[in-house]
Image (cartoon, rainbow, N blue to C red; front, side, top):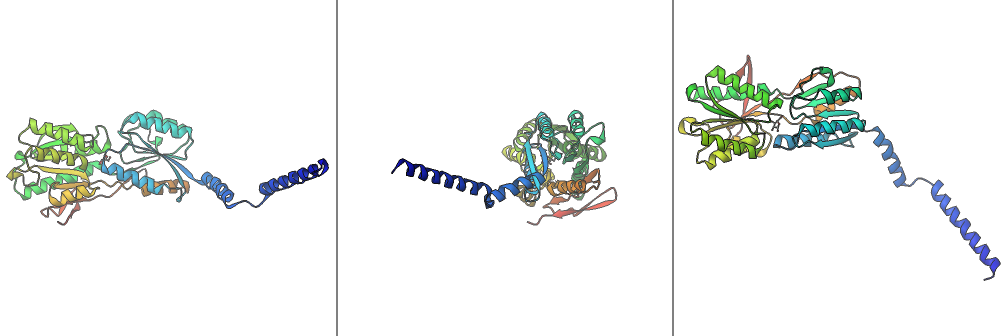
Length: 354
Ligand code: AHR
C-alpha cells in the first residue's frame, strides 16, 4: 500500500471512529441512561428519614424494626437511614448528630431511656429537622424539641396486668398476704420500665401484696434467667414473677423449671405464676395458651405506619397530635377472668384458645 493510500485509509477510519463516538454521545438515551437519570431524579424526591433504634434486645424490638423498615421503602418514597444503637444512649446521640450532618428531612428516635436528650435535640431543632419520638418517651425541658410522640401507655399496661392478677386471686380466694412477688424490670430509666414498675407498685400498695424485690432484667432472656435464678435462691416463697417483657419471662420460666418448681397460675398448689408484656412472638402466645405465662399485657410494636402517617401530615401542613397512645389488649389462656375494670373502663381479656 502506497503511503498516500495509507494516509487516506487512516483518515477515513479516524473520521468513522469520531462519527461513531459522537453518535453514542448525542444519540438516543439508552434505557440504562434513562433509568439512572430517573433514579437520580427520584432519589432527590425521596424523603430522607434517619431512624435511631434502641437495639435488638427483644422480639418486640425486632418486630418494631421490621415495621419501620417495611414502611419506609424507596417504593413508598423514602430513604431510610437505620442505626442500631445496641442499647447505648451515646450511640443514639452520635447517630442523631450524623443525621443532622447529612441534612435528613426527619429524625425518628426510639430512645433507650427518658433522660439526657436536651442537648442533641436542641441541635436538631437548630438545624430545623423535625424529630418524631416513638415507643418510649423523652424527658426534656422544652417540649418543642420534638414534634410529637407515638407509643404505648406503659403504666396502663402494668395496671391492667395487676388488675388481672387481683381479679384472678380473688376468684381463687387466695388472700393478699400470701402473695409474694418479684419484679424483673426492663431497662432502667426506659418509659416502659418506669410505667410497668409504677403500675405494679401501686397495685402492691392498694392490695397489700408483698413485693420481695425489684431487679433489672434489661428486657433480655439471658438476664431474665440470671436474675430469676438468683432470686429463687434468695427467697423460697416467691409465687408471682412479674416480668416486664416476654423475653425476660422466657428466661424466668427456664430458671423456675431448672430449680425444680413448676410455672402456672395455681399458686395454692405451689406453682409460680409468671406474667409479662408484649404478646408479639409465637412463643409468648403459645406459652400463654399453655398457661406457662398466666397473663400478657399487650405492647404493640407496629409503629412504622403510624410514624409514616405523622410524616405525611407534616409534609401536607397538618399538625399531628403531640401524644398518640395506641390501643392494646390483655391476653390469657385462662378462662377465669374475661374482663377487667379500671377507672370505670371495662377491658375485655382476649382468651387464647388451647
Ligand atoms: O419499650 C418497649 C419495650 O422495649 C418492650 O416491651 C420490650 O420488649 C422492648 O425491649
